[in-house]
Length: 315
Picture (spheres, helix red, strand yellow):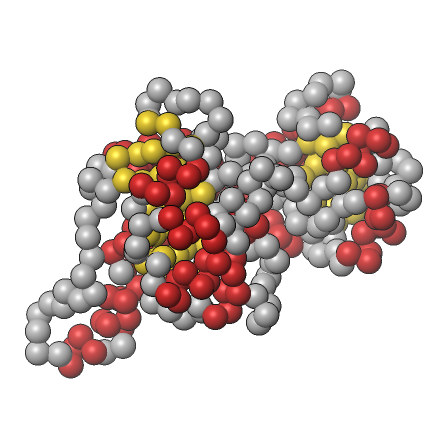
């Protein structure tokens, strides 16, 4: 079996890939540029990747390709229709990063609400040492106990965030297809109207693309806190940036972007450095434990596929 790993560098140099190397003849690339994908998959039976985009253009010549294993839960970077047409199986890794992403979502929210970055900067800059006061209470921060936290997406991550938010004393509204007995259900428009904090945990699809639109932002409470650890394109990024600058959005945290990395022409370049903004480099999924778990489960996907099992199979 010939296995090609296209972008192992995105998994981190500290991760042990031996569970995959034990399965066959493995060719590992730290990074693969879009124009290199087709050639590198020419003889492959299995493609393992994280961020690379696979489509008809670079898969057409992969005559031996039987299985694509994506090191992620989301697979919007794969042309599923073409894979079905060509009989190429696709497996993802659901649930491996639930705790990691939930942890980052909560940490980002609490940091923004409590203005930790600003208080830390006050001390680390030396201003605190030079001041005459033992404490500083500006900017003013508020307890989140009693506030309404809207969780958009009720999968593993959203459910975990809802559980923690409730434990912190928040009233939780949960937006998901199927009602959840533990939390009050609400559609996205009600979430936008009523919530003090909104966190996003949905996959990117035709239904979710642009769901946090300019119109919905206008319906939100003044000073709303928004955290996105889902996919960048679920938000109208220009509308979000405009609302941060105007003050409509009181604080904004984001780990995902419609283009990664984003350039100087991206709307978020205008809000870099603002004290009420926390932008991170698509790292929420990547705790050491989550990444190692992902590798082990990809190896299981490969083994079970060739044993005739449809474990974690998308198509």
